[in-house]
Image (cartoon, rainbow over all chains, first blue to last red; front, side):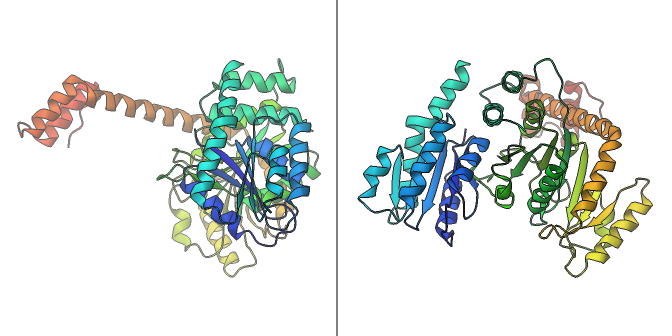
Amino acid sequence: MPTKVLVAKPGLDGHDRGAKIVARALRDAGMEVVYTGLHQTPEMIVNAAVQEDVDVIGVSILSGAHMTVFPRIMDLLRERDVDDIVVIAGGVIQEDDVPKLKAIGVRDVFNAEATTQQLIDGIESAVTAFGRDRKRREAAAH
Amino acid sequence: MISYRVQRDLARAISGVENGVLTFDQALARVRAASGTNGTLPHADVIGVTGPPGAGKSTLVDRLIEGLRTGGETVAVIAVDPSSPFTQGAVLGDRVRMQRHSGDAGVYIRSMASRQAGGGLAPATRDAVRLAEAAGFDVVLVETVGVGQVELEIVAVADTIVVVTVPALGDAVQTIKAGLTEIADIFVVNMADRPGANATAVDLRHMVRESARDIPILQTIAQDGTGVAELLAAIVTKRAAGETNAVRAVRFEIVRRARDRAVATALATLDSADGAAVLERLRDHDITRSDAIDALLAILGGPVHAH
């Protein structure tokens, strides 16, 4: 089954060229990419991820608000009992913040220098290690 | 309102059937357990929205959600976008137009990749519609991929079909061609503020007048909501008179399944020892093509056609 990824742009970022390039690259890697457009709140991102039952939430953020947005997303996922979706960060994120993001449960962080191939490999390995296999097991167990 | 937990279980059930992890009955049992609809039979009206790429289907669906919610009805949307035939990947972008309904517990939106299906829907779309119905939604809106003339699977799924077109996609001859124009219960000329909208509506009107069916032809500007109230009213009228579509849907489905079965039988015949022997003789120039076809049809047990 294809990996299903939500690509989201939170907050006030004014353009989504990068997110669209990522969406296209993931598509070409055989993934099903739900694209939500600009100006998403953490609530909108989590709602969409749950309704779409994605394997991965990929959030692209350039505005510097990542230390506000990601904790909120992780809190919402926890509040809603969603433990089978991997969260991945991309964009302009300072080195210092990477361990902080990982500490709150963000699975991987890709900065602006990352190639699309690194992103694809990162998503596939994260999903294999965490999300999809777990979903398969749970679905089969019921 | 459909609680968050029911929506989550619905989402997982749809993935289950989509990915072949659950049978439809297993998925249905889970949705029923979550929604508490065990023992009762909830009914949803299913409205199909189809038409060519870029005609404004998603924007119109967004407006329909708004109108239906204002009327107090809960709405599930199944929106299908195309999968790549080369990589199986897909970009599902229909949600972009519907974001403002996020957070409304009366709305569930699900994107689906068409995967290997060619009829304008995904293989699991029909199951997803039935699961959304079981979850308790009053209306299910199904948005097809952008279609051409012959992707008509929506007929087997929807009670009411809205065919959306835009001005200047062709002359009057396009309106009398077979296919898409035959399945419409309602025609919408969207982007009606563009040149040629009236001419397109007139062409459609002539076509409808010559057929025996009563099909409203409406003009909308989905972007600003113009004409959407009239479209909702037309849908209400059609929903009230909805019975004939069940017959049409079942006819379509039976023909399709019979065709699938016939294709499977034909392929099995070709792969059988007898079939292979006939093809071998054809390859060796022992028999003509017509002889080979007759021989294979005889094995198939079907009537032998004259050529």
